[in-house]
Length: 430
Image 1: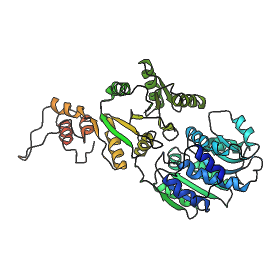
Image 2: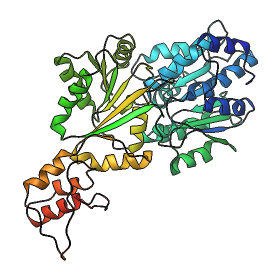
Image 3: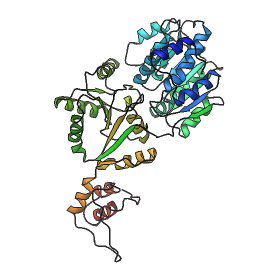
Image 4: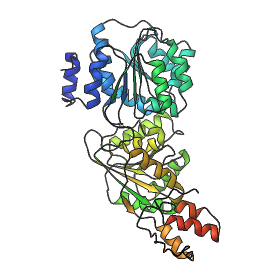
């Protein structure tokens, strides 16, 4: 129905893909008709083939070979893992054809990449930083690039690649087709779309901030020191099932992974201090069942495509609420079920509220906020003012303002904070 080349259809058949996802069904015809596309879809919805199949179709139809050091189609992605995921997803479709697909990322030998680009490239998947390094070395040029894909463009902006984009895009052919795919759309994203896309068709298959429907979620309100014990308890309940644990910092991820390994779990880690080879070996070990727990930072949130991930644990909540959606999107992929578990300490309550606001849902509580109830019982309760009777808070509800009470001093100021903790519906200033 989409008019794709028979070779592409045969590979889809071999992969067992006979029905396009919503983003594929809507984007592929528009791209093949020459339109610029702005696609908004949550992670794990099949965006790679949404832009990859029409690019491959047009490259196979053209039949000509690229000139040395040139690139015909450029796909930019923010992380090494995502570049590898995209390239791995497209490679089966070019086997036995004349097409050349290359990938360039940091953390590996640049000389080997220079040699591969020398012969010209039909489709190049790249991170912006390494691509600029190669351009500076005159190893590749983009003046004949007539197709541009910006994948996970919102994360590229979050990671500070806006200056790289402003430098790269003017190097491309003026007559080109551009596709931008993102999970979120803010003011800056709209400005990027207006600058680089020409009369684009907007395709939105799920509201920004919406998690996959098959993800079961829960939250545990815990003091920070109790998180490790709870994590080990939950991991022990599902032996042999692959789990992905997210930490906030590189050092925290490495420390947690080593602690889990000392306690008998088969664990590995992925973060910015790991070389590309180390990161790839960890992902390979997870896919092959050699490890059961993979601890990662947000650098991996949109670049890990392991369908067997059954559980995602947010050991520490992200500062950017949209990143929570991308984290939990690592499970329930390819139609499977999955579970996402969040741990929230008193100091993370603001982040948790922001996450629920972005996702437009209330995450079910598995462990109530015991610290709020303990604090209220431990301190003398303030006398009601104005003759009215205050209603108690207790630990069973959401810890609306427990953070405010925890951060104040003794006496009247502290009691005021705790009084507010019993009114979770009111906005509290810490």
